[in-house]
Amino acid sequence: MSNDAPGFFGSYGGRFVPPQLETPLAEVAEAYEEAIKDPAFMAEYEALLTDYVGRPSPLFKAQRLTDELGGATIYLKREDLNHTGAHKINHCLGEALLAKRMGKKKLLAETGAGQHGVALATAAALVGLECEIHMGAIDIAKQHPNVVRMQLLGAKVVSVESGGACLKDAVDSAFGVFAADYHDTFFAIGSVVGPHPYPIMVRDFQSIVGREAREQILAKEGRLPDVLIACVGGGSNAMGLFNAFLDDADVKIYGVEPAGRDLGVVGEHAATMTLGSDGMLHGMKTIVLQDEQGEPTAVHSIASGLDYPGVGPQHAHLKETGRVEYVHASDAETLEAFQLLCRTEGIIPALESSHALAHAMRIAPGMGSDEIIVVNLSGRGDKDIDYVAERLAELDS
Ligand SMILES: *Cc1c(COP(=O)(O)O)cnc(C)c1O
Image (cartoon, rainbow, N blue to C red):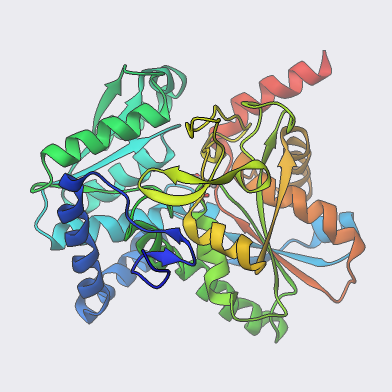
């Protein structure tokens, strides 16, 4: 396949799926292309972003954090203030509206810790579609509150007992249902990953984040930021912020992935960009943490939204071209950053977003006070407080 084939970013991306999924995914791509050219569709989407999600999200100057670190001025893009508390609702609403436009009855997805499942169940309730979420049995036991949320929102949560009963098995299970029943269902992927058109479609629905941030920083400072920072799991909040700045060569861009407990031990981190290699995962060619047989390895992060052994193909390409620099933050650095933001700004950040903050803490002191960093605060941390309290108690004892 050539590099300018649809859905490729350089040599990454594409659509590598079993033959029975080729047609349904081509239909999604075609419907998406039509929808984004339809002013009525975009107007409905944008009205919901305003009135339902609460956009635009503020770009907040974190003055006490800036003073504490003593260098560059730090701004936070407050995706944590969206309805449902994170950026995921931006693309879930887009996918739900597209499914409805295509005449589908049901939204279908996998979820790991449940964040994507909750955002999608929310969008399904709003738009008036059924919702079926596949979740590993082990994750169901660990993430009880999110299971309850999805059920309250009217979703059916399917417990996946096969394999390791985790995210990877939930993906396989949901794909199986989609292949059998694609006439009535829409597969709604939770990040800029998977086969074409999902990496492009999810990026486009998230790109509102960067467009707003660009306008907001120009209004406040009269110029573009020097640095952008976002955490990278699959990479949707990062692509959402980065997309509007990719052509601005003077804006330095960092993606931060989880170094977990130990970068030297397989299964103790999820540093895909740092330690992965080219491979195939979930219908795309990308960078993958894999063993010698090409099977994805076990991963760990203190932030469950980041423990994915792959990354969106556009990120793999942005690494290859050098436009974005990918760095990592450990669980310990992330906990430090989490606490610092709580105490300096009265904001409890998601552990995922705290990875991006950790990198800001690292570089801000070495930058000039006339320089500007924008950090994407992808979500709020209320979901993480019990876990953080346990970890801090462990560190104390
Ligand atoms: C899911 C999640 C992430 C990771 O997903 P991306 O696709 O990499 O953005 C990051 N932050 C929060 C708050 C999340 O819920």
